[in-house]
Image (cartoon, rainbow, N blue to C red):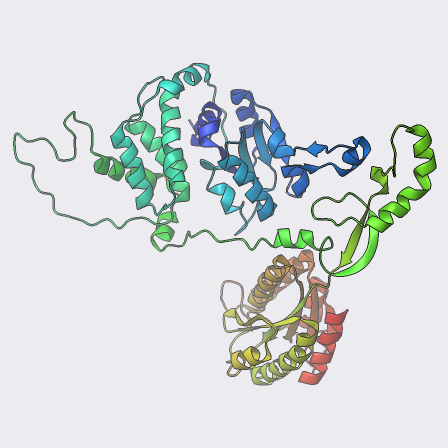
Length: 540
């Protein structure tokens, strides 16, 4: 019996106490089983949902038409049953905070967050910490079970104090400082006992709860100290047992930790012991970028629309749009006095906000010409920063040499900081071009998430000789570089390839075509020429 199917049954049995789940993989089978077992309807919440639709607001059009306030209560007030968050990793933090607040105030819905993110993308942590289960349902196997009897039995199930203490000690040993995981583990153990037709929670129920609720959240794993075993005196009870023969809370916690350890995937335990599973915080750039154009920037006229989600009503343009219709509306509605404004008349203000551009220099610091290239790149960065300070743009510098690429200067507009960071830069060695392209993509993605516009500038001759795995294989290095270049083209980042070789038909030209970059042959490039070209690209 799969644990994902058991979690589905437990969630259907106690949706109020367990509050929900975060799902990875194809969730269709899990959702179908959950709806069938719980008998609940499903409300879908897309990541782009507006705040007014989610939390409710005054319906301006209906209010003006009726002459009395008309409220749209919002989805959080209307939803019953399952609240399905599609593409939960893209949900802005302000929307996630509204859902979390509703959960804390006893909302009558169960949150199912479908996380389709890759690598370091994940659903908002504010929701992850409020649901019981973090499940991979890509290999979900359905469970044929009837929870009707268990639902009637659940209110009568009791939890012994030693199991409560044991689960709490296990949560603390796994580095979980919040009380929520322990509380949800107790609710899961209680539901497991009811599902098995028992009125009291036992050690097996606690072990299942520890595996399903606590293990996926583990942050650390306690070091086990080997102590010599002391033989127990005869005619005395085992110190690991209570008077009735049941294990003590500490002994139960040790057993639960062993169960958690056995359930962890191979290789994950070592990462836990090195504290590598600290959850990364999201910047919330999605929420910031969605507000752009509604509240900030230079006025750019008006458009038809409703004053919702932070949009500002343009009163003069609204009245101007409503004026020609007043005679017709008075004849159709003679009872109503005064100006009659309807929904199609609304005009909201538009703003044009200049988004800062970040020029990311990726410099080939390998080979005999490294010192010249690095010197010109440093000069170009300093020249650019003088102009960037006026435009409020930024510059970053990446150097790739040997077997890796390194971010030498994070995005900045500080000329003093740049000069300090660029004072002494090493050169020479192999050319890991694929690593340089991938590091540039990573920095560009960070710039985009912060609401900026990245521009990548490569200074290289394109002659890669270090493969992605660090081996000195020219053919493999060129294949890896071309694959990384195609990925950069798919990402849609504007790129400028400055070819420092003496030929225009070399590997740098082919890489520029693969990544869709603007190609600029400058075999005798200097800081002034590079700065001028990049400046023109940033202004464009």
